[in-house]
Image (tube, rainbow, N blue to C red; front, side, top):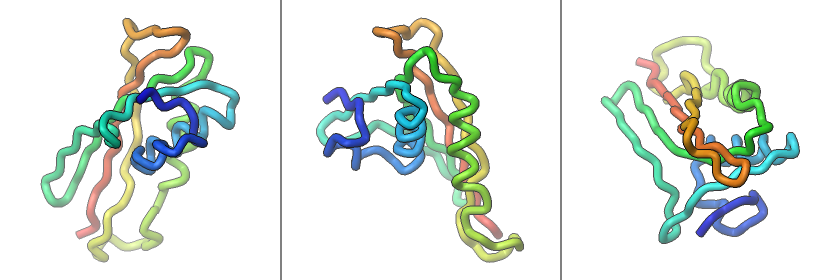
Length: 122
């Protein structure tokens, strides 16, 4: 299923960060899209117990300035645990970045691979 709106029922299958990006694109008047396969959104994940990384793709309209979107979404997760010390053991947001596939222009949408990084306070 090709998902293009936060109003669609399948939107619930996206991870929080992908949802936030999609909603931000919509609020700026842009278009976005992604594939949902068998009620699943493909995310590549890696973790070593202290740090974790997730990669996912979203197609975003070519008129959107993606670095501004990344910055706006990242601000929502800044100091996500609320602690000012590094020993609570909670998971915290490190950064969100995006890279474009320049050969992916499909009906005015480019595919961006987003990299979401989290750490653990130890």
